[in-house]
Amino acid sequence: MKRLYWILLALLPVLAHAQTPDSTWFRNHYTKQEIYIPMRDGTKLFTSIYAPTDQSEKHPILMSRTPYSCAPYGDKAYRNFYSNHYKEYLKEGYILVVQDVRGRWMSEGVFEDIRPYNPTKTAKTDVDEASDTYDTIDWLVKNLPNNNEKVGVFGISYPGFYSTMAALSKHPALKAVSPQAPVTEWFKGDDFHHNGALMLMDAFNFYIRRGFGAPRPKPTTVGPKGFSPPTKDSYDFFLRTGAIPNFTKYAGDSIRFWKDLTQHPNYDAFWKSRNVGNFVGDIAPGIATLIVGGLFDAEDCYGAWATYTDIEKKAKNNNKIIMGPWFHGQWAGRGSDGSSLGNVQFGSPTSEWYASKMEVPFFNFHLKGKGNIDQIKEANIFFTGENQWHQFEKWPPVSTTETALYLQPNGALNFTKPTTTTPSFTAYVSDPAKPVPYTDGVIINRTREYMTDDQRFAAARPDVLVFETDVLTEDLTLAGPLTADLQVSISGTDADFVVKLIDVFPDDFEYSKTDQYLMNGYQMMVRGEVMRGRFRNSFEKPVAFVPDQVTTVKYTLPDIAHTFKKGHRLMVQIQSSWFPLVDRNPQKFVDIYHAKDADFQKATIKIHHSEKAASRIVLPVSKL
Image (cartoon, rainbow, N blue to C red; front, side, top):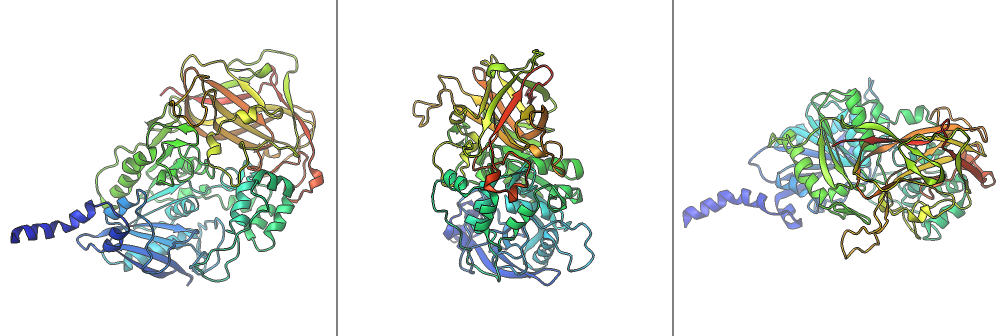
């Protein structure tokens, strides 16, 4: 009996780690402390540290830096690390660290949105997010007892930006970084601009409705008060508010970034300095990076692809990418296991696969020397339509061929260039007073499901052009970026162009007899993107259109990974508004951020499809 007692006592640490962590387990096996960590300029950053009580081994440090608060505050209030796959890090005995970034919540200092990276620091006052990360890591490895001097950093969205910045810190203890849906470029593709067009709904809701941009005079645990619109019908509210200066009135004088945004309408030094992709060549070769993103991330479909590509081109480290069929943060279990998005189903719990096969093994290998990561290839991509993971040694795959899909008269769409020698076009009238909605129905907040929504509501509008192929006789797989290459003419001097690539399901399609939405003939948006026409030649130097002159508008849409199955059709929709997702273009060449309501005018838009003016979508066709 006495021998059994000692055996059980020896097994207690093992048994404890074998249990599934919950709030009670967390409190029994972890301590929490809140520390102000000094930076090189004397500013102190508020940091919550959760350390395992187990002293049988040295523990790695896994950190996230955030502008969204490291709450809950107080030594006895524990963060919920046990509701998703982060519980695996508890079981593995990681020291988990969360920090309020400079100027946010309980940290000292002045906050700056996407604070630019300074590659030539010479004084202690030369600080950026990379230096703050370095100073934090340095303090942690020197002061936390029982750490193994190996550090990882990860984060989703804005914390993804801080993760990329961490990779630039060059601290020798930093071994692995995972920027996830990282903020990367706020003019060309992330959050608040797409190809120079203002993502009005997200920008206004984030800075003004949510109150993120409200000043914080001193450290606090209390969040800002937001703004409540007079109606819950977002389309009606944004339309009634009108031109951008009317939204600026709601912002007042205190929201700094809203003012910055409206004062920098073109791609100038302000935006370029805030594109972290310009600096990723400074990532040390010894730091492994794992880029993660969602194919249907409404907030930031661009950032993961762009960050991966920039690192591949400019750095010499071990860099890999994972893209699943996810909305923003869905891979981290934010209310879904990744088996569906909206009405579209993916056939398996993709988030669980990601956590167990990709993220946790990545950090275990680099920070604990545990296991191997042979199963994590260069590019680990989920293909919708087929609903299968594929892994590649290069992205896009070497088998990918750029193939032109041509717009034809009478709404046809095929791989043959038009042969008509006479002018041929399809026209529509774009009316800013009646903009095309981005989704169907009355909506309060911007939905995440619009990325795969049924587009039949848009196809029925006279200001949306529809081009469709015949029924496919074999599967067609696309892997990589799309290119819209349009020949257009407009009656005004400026216009937006929204191109959507759509998978049209068969008329008899259903997932099961219990489908809650009619999937017969479903028009699944696979990818959609806007281009502000004035930037068609240059983001730095916008130019007006010459009315009624045929002009090329060519731009790249974010990568896709999708198989159009045999029996389906491809559809392309083209429109000039996507409201209130994107702000309305007045359709004349004025400073849109300071335009008047009277500046908005109707425009006739023509999409040309003749031998000399052939509009096309360039598809990345792949043989998997």
